Length: 161
Image (cartoon, rainbow, N blue to C red):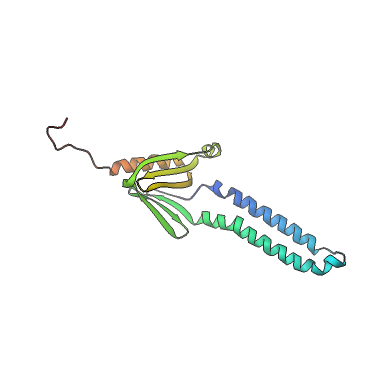
């Protein structure tokens, strides 16, 4: 194993922000419903409060916690033979001998923190790995180890030029 990493930390920035905002909004609305109200709202306020808490919990789970758990359970492993993306209990492997090209994509924000998208071009299609930290270094290592695997082209024909 040469490199073992998980997606860049900035991949969970927005899920964390969404989670905090959902907790804030849900608690404010539930707190408002917990206050003393006039008769029509006073009878249904406890039921509405539990409905708001339930909806807030489901939204927090889907848009906040699940992306964070997905980030925690994803890792990228580069060995001298292959690139393995381990995501939520499943592995995807790309043998380096099948890779004929490596491309990078970086936004301005990704260039600042040296992360980006690594694209491994193979005959079966492109293997795309998002939010790779130190993406330029990883791409250089992929090319270096791929080239080390390539068979040496030595001509056995003595008449070849």
